[in-house]
Length: 438
Image (tube, rainbow, N blue to C red; front, side):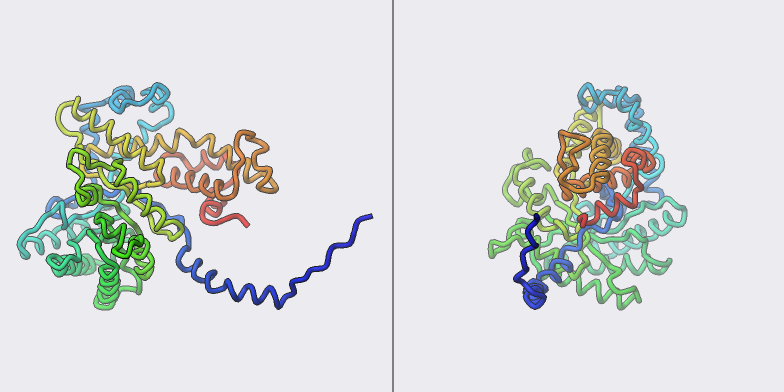
């Protein structure tokens, strides 16, 4: 004979009182940590000085990248050797898994995913009339590229910082660029601007105010203007009060901050690190990016790593060394949850795409198998039944689904292959990647 269920001691009034205590935190959590919205994140941002931007910029970069491959590594095996890939990732594997052909196709069809027209460090300081001319010319080139269907899916400008000496010049550039674009129509869907060298929350407040005033002046919808914060000063990581200022930069941006981009060389130089040791994988840089990741986690703000300034130009030996280093650094970033980085030269594109595609292709079968088991199990405690060496909890399954979604978005794995391997559609995986299972 079973004993009766024990009586409950907490009534509805008790539960309502407890709900009321936690309700403000519930609201704050939902507002400040909405999670990732599932939109595609570009694998890179290409920085090009404004005076070098033309309507055929994507075609030129794609052609130069392909020419570099043709000259220095014309076959899958030659490319694998140049990158120093292990035996199980040799030229045969590159070709068999479709990575080589995917890279060639990418260079032909979409060599630049995110273009940042640079009017800051990569452009330098010039007379006002010269910068005004270059701003208008670059904006018109972007309009022409869009008209011919060759504009990158994401684009924007990096204008000068809000430091006192450059603040007004930066705002003048932003205003002029927007005005030129809007004369020809609406802003591109993937439009975003980069605010560099941020040192205070007040600079973010000022950027929010500038966005509001520009929206009003140009008749743009509310919150149409968004921006990325470039984390390249020590102050943006650690404030004078000892707090992680970068978290405040995100949360006091009025929801307009879409990304945190790390500036490798400015940041490490500010710490007194010598030029020979300034690098994406320096411990000081890794610390800063870990703080950035903590600040952005759950907010929907995307992270981007910096760049490698070892350019693949010159003899084949020099190019191969630069390719191997770039490939290693891209892989390292991906392993640490940084799915985007900067590229500074067309010859960096082959290694950007190859390293990204290999990262997703190498693990896709195992990850899809784990997802299939998870989705088939009635409860999370039995998720390991079909794949006994893994016991995946909901948070892990969410990360696995996010991995698959990124692989599809960047073109590394076909959507139909994923659906076949997991036994469900991408919409289901998107829901799993975007929220906790309940």
